[in-house]
Length: 413
Image: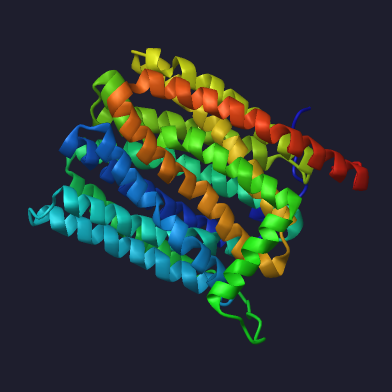
């Protein structure tokens, strides 16, 4: 049997169960907001470039803010940080809805809204990554990561599907107000997660000094360095494509909001399957590395026939495959990072993982969006596939050496 059943499910942990409900509501709202902004970018401009710019705006703040909040998450109770970021997301969604209702919405407003969404998300994700290991035991950590990823990607299906239906039958304003209400419900659910966590009272260094300490620790650790490298490649390859789904739908299908919802839902289904697969794995570093490498290879090959998919069902199938293997690689790398990092460095190292995971698609969407407008999607996708395979060959040898070292120390690895 390829996957081993995890001996301890995170859902047995009371705090994780309460957090899981709050996260379901907040993540559903996030996907609704992202879908709405992506659709508005295409509806306003009908260019791949501006869709890429809007998507990049939701991802680029990760570079600046995630490392800072990674340091801060080691200093305060992360539950309180999640409360602040969730309320902030509700405020941003509500303000966008208000701007549209008052007739003040335009491309500049869209870009500002995208950056605000990205800024709050950049703070939210490293806090979340530091929070989960504090509410589950190490044995249940892979299960918690897999379940959280499954929930995230289930929302990727439900959020766009619900948003597409609401936009078609009501309005974007109503969709954003619905998302605002979901954020507020998530905030209420988070108040029931009572985390008894007391940060260290030892004298702290400056934020910059602690951040540099985390960077040096990550760069000097062979396994973490490889994990971050894999995460960058995965973001540039698969996540970039998924961020450009509004433009992909418009270019290949002349798509409406309904067709975009189907493609986004297909990506979500693939991700759900990938998350469930990884949730069944034990703590096996060698297997996780091999799965991550295999996922990248399949994603690269799957890019080639995308531009030939002129029918919705075929394009949705290919998008689902890319999403599945991208998710498998992403969850594998996150699990490896969480299992490898020392607890006192967790916030800082995982914030760097978040930068690699979310920041690399920001660069990818901007570059691919600009290139695709000039040379076409077909050439762009083929170039992405070729570059991905070259990068895969480059990283495979050090990964193999790392696996062999781990197996020399621990034969079960």
